[in-house]
Length: 347
Ligand code: 1HN
Image 1: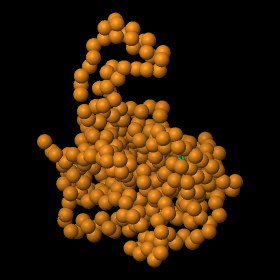
Image 2: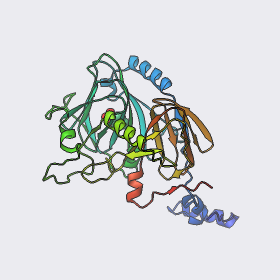
Image 3: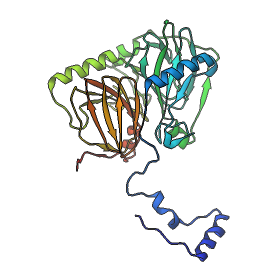
Image 4: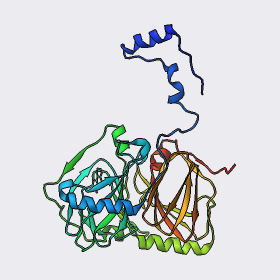
């Protein structure tokens, strides 16, 4: 597929003439349109949480959560500068809600996930139910659900936001509204959705009404317990250690249709075999220390650092202590379109 047609004066004149007519010759750029393998401009990159935290506290002195609507520092992939993208298809940022602040209620067609990095006791309300957040909790705000955040504690709350913004942008399908009130009315008791849908039980006559999970907080306490029990069984995947995906209990599919999220344990001393897949992935270690080789870069990481593995880049992980890594990608979309591929060959 690396065939290139040569330029001649006649051909160049032809290309210029047809350009004015809204035409172009496929043979001049076929090889960049259809590549033999993924060739992303997205780059491997790591952000230190300490650096982000420091800048976020500065931002906290410059603007309130309310005035900003969302006080977020966007994680911009250096290969996609100025585009508010962490990978080609995903947006990510780190959000700060200070004690006493509210991030006002709104909704939009973009789907969002949160992964709590620091602070305990702040809340997110989603469609009338409040959930209290702790580090490691995975919280979702599906497309068009009303959501607002608040912090009644005396310490700042930080979390990672992941959204499918570039995907919605690609389809030109963005809608958004703000509520008149800063906070939406709370109409359901905290813990109601976990009780109904998160205990291996479902309401007997439940009909599937949305594409997303009805659970909107997957508490770290439960996730961590699952990993700890699995660790004792001594069955490791050579490329992933122990890796689970967050699911929609109604369908068994990913928790959301556009964003896939995963949690993974790498026990102390474990080194994974080389792996690559077509879903560019954002990783957030929440416990432990280690390093990952991504393409030709090596990133040393600790809790709350954030790093990117672009599409089809080889990755290996190594843990110096028992480590737990959260990750997210566009894998649900790629799977539904028949595009997702992985490569476990270690040649
Ligand atoms: C959003 O709604 C949140 O609700 C965070 O916390 C970040 C970035 C772009 C668009 C909407 C939130 C966002 C966002």
